Amino acid sequence: MSKVAITVSCSSDDATAVDRLAGTLEAMGTEVLAVHESIGIVSARAQERDLDSIRALEDVSAVEVGSRFQLPPPESDVQ
Amino acid sequence: MGTAWSTSPTGTTGRALVLFEEGSEDSAAQGLSDVLGATIEQTDSSGGPVSGAAIAQCDGLVFSDLGVAIVAADDDQLEALTAPDAAVEGVVAVEPERTVYAQGDDPRDVAPEPVIRMLDYARGMHDAAEALMRAAGASAPSPARFDESQVTWGLQAVGVPTSPLTGSGVALAILDTGIDLTHPDFDSRRITSESFIDGEEIQDANGHGTHCIGTACGPATAVDGPRYGVAPAAQIFAGKVLSDRGSGSDAGILAGIEWAIRSGCQIVSMSLGAPVSEGQPHSQIFETVARRALRRDMLIVAAAGNDSNRASGRVAPVSHPANCPSILAVGAVDSGLAIADFSNRGDEQSGGQLDFVGPGVDVHSAWPMPRGTRRISGTSMACPHVAGILALFAQANPRARSDELVALAFKGARRLSLASFDAGAGLVQAP
Image (tube, rainbow over all chains, first blue to last red; front, side):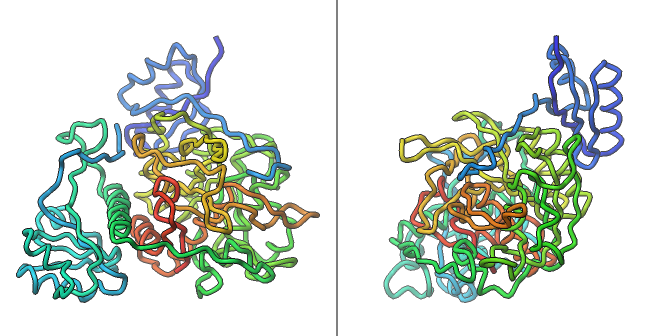
């Protein structure tokens, strides 16, 4: 099963809590891509089957599968 | 967790809202005190926010920056306020104060954070003022015609040519496709930049980012053509969160937001979005991030999205992440000040209200060299107009918090003959 890009919000924007969450995610086998302590966010890639387990973690307030953004082609009149 | 507000169908508090003509706020407090025989407080725009206790317990409170008062008064007293020979000058309209509840939450449990309460309260008070103005039969100004030989129509429409402000001292981040660092209109500007796109530098090979940065921060005198920049002296922070092919992800955008916070930016402009379906809840994560940014005095402004085709009857809701209550959503108007055909609509049921409109049709701004300039349309073009205007407000009010800047922008917006779900507070205006 392929991994999906996820964003995990820490229940606190305290740097220690965010780092702890990142460590917990890595221990679970989640691929941590970035840790944003200032905004309490961890960007990661995880198996879909693990999302509920991640949501249940003590330091987690929300988990969302990442959105993709796509601008119209540069030659478009409306952008 | 929800932060959208809804009104109880029968909920009124027993107090009344009184709308005053602009400029009569100072005499309002004394006039109300004389008629009602009560102590009337008045907010001070140079001081801190009014406390929740004061709002709940006062007999009368004039919101000086909004031109609206809350009063405890009986029916006879309220009638006296609106009589032809009323002892209080400048009263435009009176209506009952409504009780509101957080949508989907038990009111006993939810206590919105103070800074968000003020952001939502500022919106709510403006909505109330808007309703009162309509009830009073106030008419919107007619659209003007624009000569673009010196200044773009968009800058004229938002009042930039007559403003003495430049955005000096204000750090403004634009998260987009980057910027053309070779563009002569930015030769004299210091640009702080960062790319969050793997394998790509800040240099903009798309154009969208350069156009948006031009609108928000372009020079007072362009090398070629009319002036197109709102805040010509703002500090430019260009964050590349969309690739040269125009694509990006939540992860890149969040990284850009954190960078902007750490860089001390006061305003972030994001002309990007992903379509949402009707009634789809906003992202709890982006809402949380936006609240955290607000606590650090950084405002996030985002484009409402271009998924609508109003001529064919299709009107789409405000896109993600602009549909987050703590992110200012910007729709687009044309040079006739009509809503743009493509501009998305606010959906208050899901918290995705639209806050302002900005010039977004046929907008002239910078484009990567050798072309240099280009005219394009979109809520992407409206968003940096609003961001630049907020930078002017920030320059004029250096001690103001983010929610106070928003309240000032709400108060100063030009009301249009458009519904609030299409135009929010109206067309943003330069201080």
